[in-house]
Length: 227
Image (cartoon, rainbow, N blue to C red; front, side, top):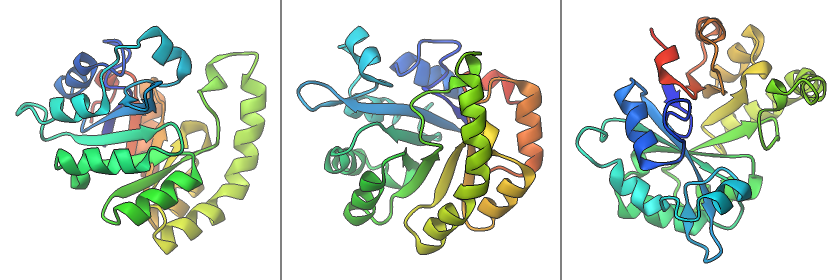
């Protein structure tokens, strides 16, 4: 699967309705976007607090789900990245209201959110995002060594824990930073569920990951994923 990160963030500003549409136009099979509550508790398409402060009029989750019902967009899968604990009922209510529960995979790093969503809507597909970092620090030469150390440790520690969650039905997918994914990691996870690698903006790396057998690749530029 080709997943557009925040829509098509490298082409059109991410977490906007225009970016969601552009991702589909460029061939994305799945459109991923973030959900974060504003000061009034309304879920909006924003990656973090800084993004929300810069775009206080960011689309609401309800507006985005309605937008993705347009005929030219209705075939695309939806990837909703939940950014905070406590929004689970609102997420489920909106997905039900717009009739897209069966079209959506909700991912998060938060165990409490995964548990609440499974309880509220057992049919909803859920994904755990790993490792637990708030942004991709690999692109920064200052933070890259710390991330590499985290990734190397996580490759050893995470698979048994993730497999346990997949086998128990607590999650359906693993959303892994691309640095975590090795052929062995991919074989272990895909034996029990889906494996989606994020965020990949290098065509060569994308082809390597695809050859490992990942379920999907998330990119800021869907034009890079041509297969």
